Length: 222
Image (cartoon, rainbow, N blue to C red; front, side):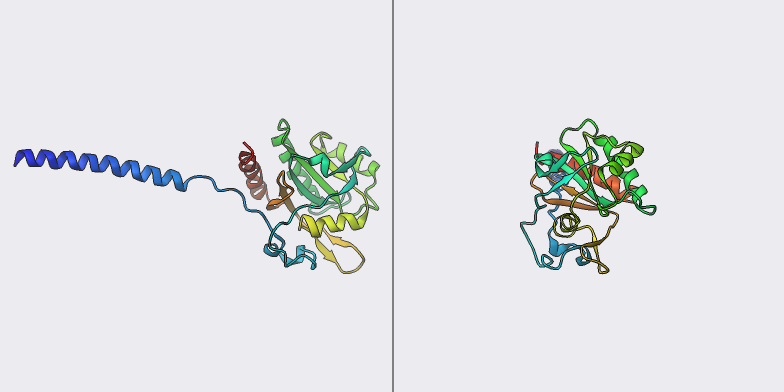
């Protein structure tokens, strides 16, 4: 009887150890970080998406572009080749959400300052007002680092199309051709020109999530 009890005790000890190991392995498997989603036009708020692509379910990417930054330099998709970047839309004379958005972008800039893989890109929705000189004054005032962050201006139609057909972050203004009602949205773009996240650019909590998602996205390329 005593021998049987000893064997039973050994059995339960082994069973307990095996159970702990199995539970640990299951937990570890569940805890594996999932990749960020790839955003498609049909899964984004329709008011932010051009009607011609609202049905699109896959293969969406940011279109090629050619714009001019605060230094008068030409900025194209090649400037962001093999880069992760955060994009938004703003205008320098905005007194409402833009100063907050710029502050949050500055916070991201501080986080990525020494990271060669990540950059920022801000598009003016009033290109007829935001000349190169105006963007430069704004950049200096806001502490923009030219190597990390481009403020760009250019053809209104191109910027409109980028906002609503590529980044999916701006509303249409029915009062004029290619009119834009900019929003507080930030878009996280991967190295394949795909949207991997959309965030509230005036919410520090949402921008905190964006910063963490940049780190998650970087892991996909390791």
